[in-house]
Image (cartoon, rainbow, N blue to C red; front, top):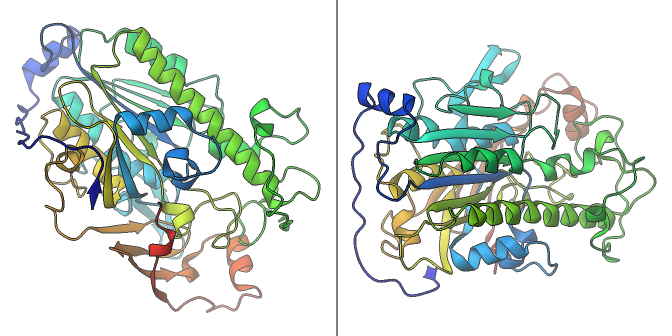
Length: 443
């Protein structure tokens, strides 16, 4: 069901992009743009936030004022209310966002008994950046974690590439570097992708340091007085990972309050991005998408301060889209029904009249965002894979179907915390679950 403002009827024509060739290369070398018109170019900016749960944002009904800038973005653009990450883990989810294809296609097996241990987005697979580059756009990526590197194939298509060489170093890449790059693209068409990893690193900061103002922005809820156990290792179920322990016997409410404060910090960073575009005079000519990469559990399905299973806490993420000037009638639109992180890439390509490559498995949601195509794609079905457990999950309507292979857990600490005293064949059989998750839907 689609609710929100009324939209005029109409059609959205896709302009087929010319293949990349000598003309594109010459224009790029000269700093030009194939699609640029009079008065400057257009911009497309994706802000991908690791660990961002949709149900901790005000526009999704949260009771804390965690997200004033994101709430304003939802009011001025399109909010996909039932978006699911294509993977509950950070790296494969970024792969899905940047390729529009299921991330398991980028898995690489070292040895049969080792399972999937490496990732590489092969050249034969689609790339959002490559499609923009082939259409003559300038492209740049600003990533905050070193795991998102060139060896994973994510750099393909990006002319500018900035990634942290130190885990979670906020000074090396970030908003200022993004805006400095955007400032030089005023008269060109440009596409940029920035990762905000504040939420992923929030619990990893040393508890011996003085807390930041954001950590104490909200008071812990007295109702969350449970004190979870602390593990002696990082990768573990049913306990706080050692690296995320804040010291002392802390109730779960303190961890939730710290997380919500960090959400407020991320919201401020996104506000700074929007304000920067406004100062540069580029706000109206830029399509802005903010998407959660994965969620964050507080014990709902067996993980604390981590993501990796197929629960709503791991998968339900925000997907907000504000189209540039020229796409009339999108302010305050709410799109109901399941969408996947895989849908981001084709939606952005169609919004700029660039042909969607055949290999992209995601579905463009542009027509639905414009209020012109409600339900045209038939029953929505979202497939999620590449979690901590082998297998995956299928979501359709209010129903979920999981087929997982716990025995494929590679790390001994995860296996022991899941099974206890581990026998050689423990977890060899698949676990099948079918359930209704409608009660977890957002208001």
